[in-house]
Length: 263
Ligand code: ADP
Ligand code: MG
Image (cartoon, rainbow, N blue to C red):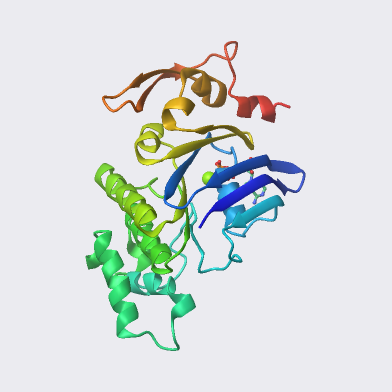
């Protein structure tokens, strides 16, 4: 299912968190959303998920937007509830759950936990888990809803290196196999370059650049958006390798976010 975001603006009171953002995610493709803290990544995800009031248009394929179509994993997933891991994943199937949970529901939820390498956590209480374990469980919950659109807000922020690679690899395989439109916000630009088909850079609520990793990740972009001096080289496959060297001093370039905040 295609996601089209056209001229979307989101305000929190007087604060404009997104300003005229247009972006599309095609079925079978992963878009990595990057940008400094406060640039509007979570706001954009929440708008697409139907959780933030916006101006402009957000289209999801031809079908009307429904809970079953969009699988959203928010950035802050606290251990708010007193549920076991298996129960949390079963909630992802809520739209199709009958009055009682069937053997099939339990098997599907268990299989997802297995694919994410955390089958052994099933009987544990969600509140007892580490942040990274919780991220894997909540991804299983989102996938249990069999979404056509996948929105993952910093899904790897608490994961170790291996779990990052495994989670992102699984997300990419599912995106291809099921023709999902997937938008993932990430802070690690080198990971984003390797994992995503295209990159969208947000800066102070505006879309600064979008395109293939090699076109978007340039020293100029890193200076303008992040306020960082960086070396950008290419790996054997031609993908950009970014090595941040130092923060720009104020006289060189302030990040655009800071300029915008300063008015
Ligand atoms: P990111 O995910 O890129 O770090 P966010 O989308 O969370 O950025 O935030 C974008 C801007 O909107 C920030 O300036 C943030 O302080 C502000 N913001 C986010 N949520 C709210 C809210 N509920 N009320 C007021 N301002 C908010
Ligand atoms: Mg965020």
